[in-house]
Image (cartoon, rainbow, N blue to C red; front, side):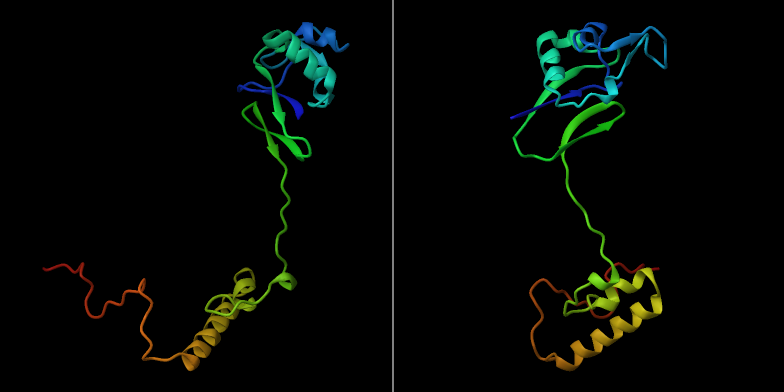
Length: 167
């Protein structure tokens, strides 16, 4: 298991003076926004640094600086992790990769609204989208059997809408 230190409450990561001394970090007695002092180099620490983990485990809440609640989170070995945060409260999250499609990456699918032109066109030209939709609809109409029953999930309503005003 990998052990990672995070701040569990809003406010932001911060070490106590005692934790800073145990890690050999300097404490600057200058006040900053909502902080009575500043630990020089605390943000450069790797959150999985064994020394940091040991200090937080041994000091418990005594390792937490002002506005912090430092905890050790265990993550399975081999997980590519990162620290996510909202308003200073942090958690460990598995990193994921994302690829955005380019026009050359689009693979065609048979069916309405799913030809390559229909998938890519909205970012470029609405006329191209409409042309692609019309072409697929015409091909589907030419190859379908009008006497084939509709799938059970399809409902066709003819005539007036049942929600008409009588007035």
